[in-house]
Image (tube, rainbow, N blue to C red):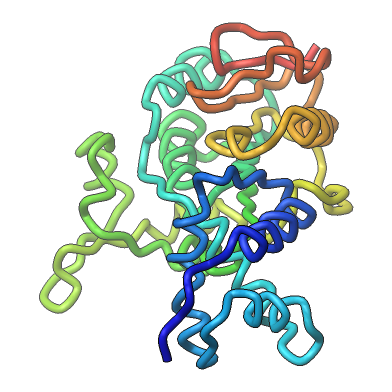
Length: 268
């Protein structure tokens, strides 16, 4: 069955839906992307109109489809040691001088897990047998399943130190050639969980020494940025560090975090 092009009204329905649920603001230029990503679901149900799929998503007969739609529209590309300068700062300015009993990091938009495992490798190098852990979260259940499995293609490794590949990853052979899996000792240090940053934080979340919230704020409007950042800042220890992407800024977003250098902040 041929799928009709998405109309402006249909796009607006999905735009409002994902904004209300996840705070993501889809600009009109994303109309083609939305149509392309959702087309497979229309085909799956034998639908020709995006409006009919919207009614299916918000209806009661297929409750799981709403999460499928969220997974499709919120999945973003990532890779190991993205924005390497952040990991250098994390290693040199935070981990090396750290003296304490337990170190906790939150990867707050972890996608398929590359950021969380990159942090874990650096922490393993410098904290070794000390008590440390990473909590990693995302809105998409699909990417969290990938993250927990910890299996990736070799092309995700452009910025990884070859030493880390040898020490913390298991290369696939024969049928698994071209893939690698993060070592179980590293995987055991990372807990993955679904968290909607627009909602109240999970109870018993605890406080963190460092929070990474990178490549997320670019999808939010100013008001949503403020709500999300200030909500996450409540989970940061006094003096804790808060990282955003190099393409993002917290200028006029919050008074609770002081900029140390572009994209790196500290809780006052």
